[in-house]
Amino acid sequence: MAAVALQHVTVTLRDWFEANVGGWRDVEVRPHDVELGAGFSAEIFFVDVTYIDRDGPQARTLVVRRQPTDFEVVLGSSLALQGKMMAALDAWGGVPVPPWIGMELDTSVLGLPFLVMGKVDGQCATQRPNYNVDGWLKDMEPAGRARSFRNAIHAFANLSKIDWKQGFDFLARNEWGKPGVDQYVGHLVAWHAGCAKGRSMRYIDAALDHIQRHKPLHAPVNVLWGDATPSNVMFDASGEVQALIDWELAALGPAELDLAWWLYFDDLFSRRFGIERLPGLPTRDETIAIWEAAVGRKAENLEYYDVVVALRMALVAVGAFDRQVSVGNIKADNKSIDANLMTLYLAERLGMEPPEFGPDFYAFMSNLTPVEEK
Image (cartoon, rainbow, N blue to C red; front, side, top):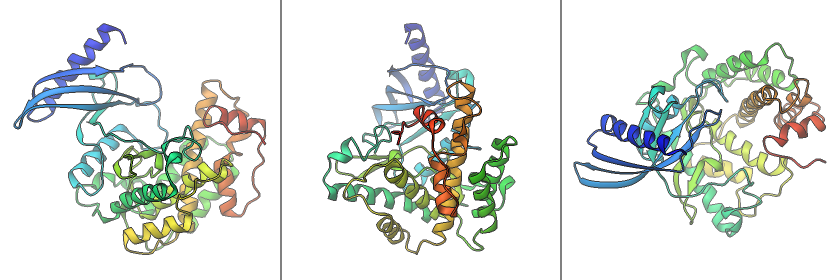
């Protein structure tokens, strides 16, 4: 970036650290790989910092995440929610997260709200390229893959041990219903109401009706990660979990929802993309068994939660569709809003006739995760 902008970041963050991080003084900041834009995606850059605290001189590398406020991928998600969640988890200590430093919501400081966390060394199972096709996980032996995923499942299963009323009550959104499955479903109802825009969406509408009519009468209220996928787990070279990242979708609900989300993405990045899963990765049944052993109880109502998380992801696809229309990537009459991988999954779960894919679908996917035409 331009030298003047780099100097601005250096001075601004130096002053911010000294004013907002307790006990830090004589701070020096060296940013690197900084490019401040004004897009719709979050921006991440690193800074090396030195400072003096009560234990003497310190040196470390930190991560700064800036995030726009005018575009929601998921209704109710925000940098503020992610910051509160990471701070609460760092204080709790029961799951590995990046060390928490602080958050700034005043856009006058760096142009956008931002949070700062400690840098965690490791690697995730990437979505692009698909971890089943290329990357460190593919290079592992099957036993190492099994161990890596088992460690990740154990890590997010530990969230079920949290008493949400002890430091996590900021997750309660009473406007969507009582904490738990009522609130989670109420959130999807509100989200659907905001994004439907008068459109009839066959599979999404049917799924919304289904989850409202079949809500479990008794379900636990747990703290949810909200985005339990291998791409949000930082592993070391041996497959040990270093940190769970990306907490902006955190919520309250039955712990099975995180399990269902993990299973959904495991299926998406293999079967539904027409890609063979890597040998050694736990099957669906094995994954459920690992989770049950970690949580200490049987998974209940999982078929129902499969539909809930699939609907959630289908609503994400509606947002992605509208975003692509707004920037001119696809036409407004593109039929993929009702014929995509997410609605196909809903059709399977609800016993409906599956959607037919055509040129509109491949045009839509080409700007997200390209799918080979068949």
